[in-house]
Length: 96
Ligand SMILES: [Zn+2]
Image (cartoon, rainbow, N blue to C red):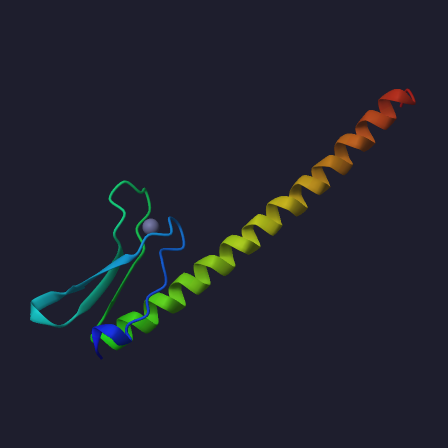
């Protein structure tokens, strides 16, 4: 795999380009978010560069999908909480 063939997605948490480290002169290959300031660790380790690149890109897709699902979950929970609050307020107004 040539360097020019490598297409790595950015970190799903901070949007930074990840770093590639070839341990022991080539294998295993570690791809990790290069953001030193961040409080998250996203990394994959595989035997070959191609495997590591694929794993990294799959992992970022999974995390991105999870975060979208999480945001939807929060939205649904807020909507539910709003209904409860509205019900309580209505009962108070009606003297329930
Ligand atoms: Zn990051």
